[in-house]
Length: 115
Figure 1 (spheres, rainbow, N blue to C red):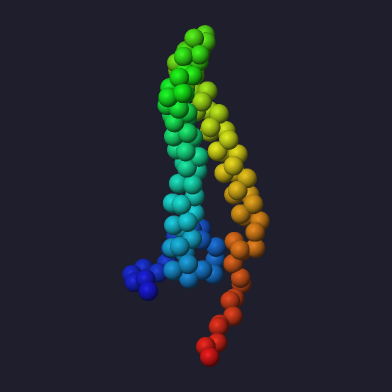
Figure 2 (cartoon, rainbow, N blue to C red):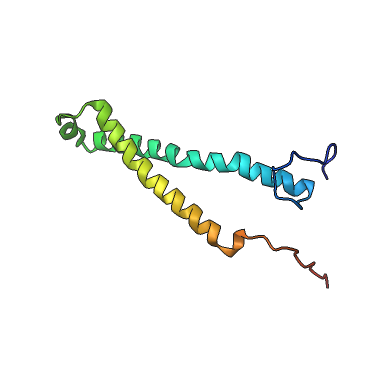
């Protein structure tokens, strides 16, 4: 049970939510959603750096270093390649998740009788 002020600022959650539901809604929308937008960038940078390390271990990085690309452009190309793939995957999964019935809350859940 939440104690203290039970009124949240208007516009935080849809009308009709209890204070507990308003807090959960605000945490998911205000804190979790922006964090989920950072995940593709984080995984892309990890993938790009491991890609460069893998090329060094396989001894194929010398061929890349002989190209007229600067080191900065080479790293940027690897990071952007990963970011684009991860961002597309993230957007696609968000669209599909929003369309599934599991993410649509029932209007009034029926109580479960205990036997």
